[in-house]
Length: 253
View 1: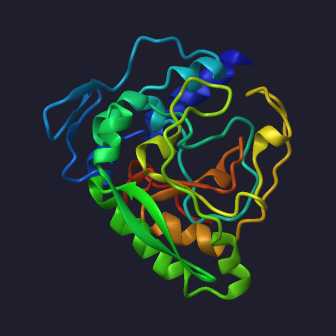
View 2: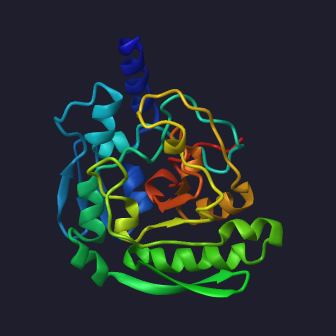
């Protein structure tokens, strides 16, 4: 069974895991990418693949590299179909890449934060987000579009939370909120997989109440949604344009 899973993963990478997704997704930040390495505009280079073991799921999520980030194809705009077992496009992350883009330390990251206004049903909230790559402008535009939705949908964009330097629960990996490129919405009424199970390889059922109207607005601006993960986190959106680059994104249903 493990051999079949590994072969399937390799076929998936060969079928679509194009390193050019990084160049398309981060114009002005990523200078070049090929099957061997990725180079940022400032000259920093990373290997596309590292030697760290990635045979088991736990190894993959803890030792992900730039190739692993593209291994599972994100289904932008698609239907609300429960993701298959261990299908988490975007949840496998190579942390040094994001540290190089947004800041290696808490102090460096905070130098790149700006404050934007986020529309709420009662006024406006002030949120701290990264200015790198225009993330602040994209998130501001998202808020303006959500504000035009009917109230029954807009209510799911309340309680917004962005920057918070911290690790992901029960791990030593930095949360994407640490870089100022993620936002949580309606945290009291959305769903998180760890409320059902704690083990990464546990069999869990899918739950979601976040309207797809909100999801599709985020995806249009380069943000992926945690509700498209087997390990669902339906309040969570993060800026991951490499997974939404025109030649890399999965076609919507």
